[in-house]
Image (cartoon, rainbow over all chains, first blue to last red; front, top):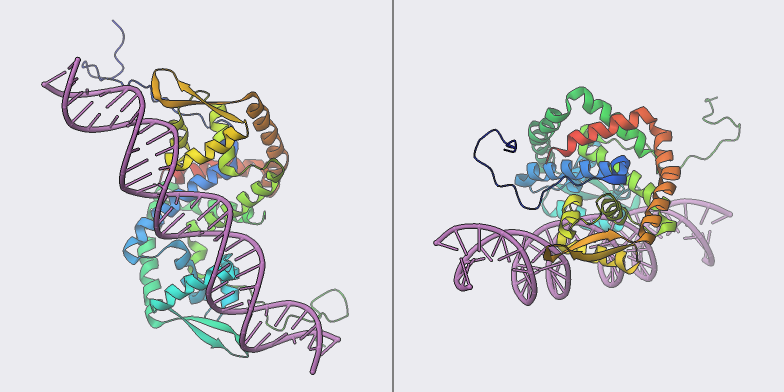
Length: 163
Length: 163
DNA sequence: GCAGTATTGTTGTCATTCATAACAATACTT
DNA sequence: AAGTATTGTTATGAATGACAACAATACTGC
């Protein structure tokens, strides 16, 4: 009698196609691949957490930059985030329509817009961030531990200097 | 006399708009943001390195998975990479047109394709990987150090279990 | 063996993201 | 004043990703 594969006596029917784990092969040692998978997981969790705020990562980042640098010119904000200025327009349009941010004339340069959060935008960002920390970052720290998170952040920064 | 900012006596004209560093604000503590920036940098470097091979990250990953799991069914390959099967078709079509991979009838299931690399595909992948390690991964290890890279890989794996 | 259901590869379609070119208004340089 | 650069914007196209539908095939329960 062959040794049963499970604890119980009843024979569980194995899926006919042995679902053997797929080997990653060369990918296993490629940092970029592992980095991408991790990033997708984190963004996915971010999305779920921010669903009730209807806020995507890029939108959050714009609000955060404006909040930390009020009056910064539109081109500087997009540049800081690595978003090209053409694509930044629609992004900002939506935030303005939602009354979270506003374009103001930039003092001394009539080409430029100085960006600010509205009062609503500031409150909204604060709420979103609180919720993010309470849920999303909390989950991150659950799997990582807080010392590891700091370690990870520092390693990631070194990579960002690559390109 | 104010202390000169540069070594030379000649006063370099500062850009009139003080290019003060932009504060990241709330983003500074958000893992997802830092992760994304790092991932973009690494992918950018990957792209440059693989330009002469005309190979994008997704294409490389498909070749690597097939190489490590020859005969694996098409749906398993796309599933392993998190690419939905509809979008996987065109991706594989191109690799097949370039004679790097091929679809074969799967034994015992006339619906499925079993995927293999061609001899050309195997040689191509080996070359691409060699080049990648010599240039791309070398640069990565230059900024990271090899112990840090292993540490980073392990931290990233923990994150991937998030979603 | 048969009826209903699930899976596989594929096509088509749509939304999102990203890069590029062009343009008008304005600023800067000389 | 003339030429050049920058800013915000529009338009456009490539690449990516998600979804529904379909035909062929496989599986399940009876």
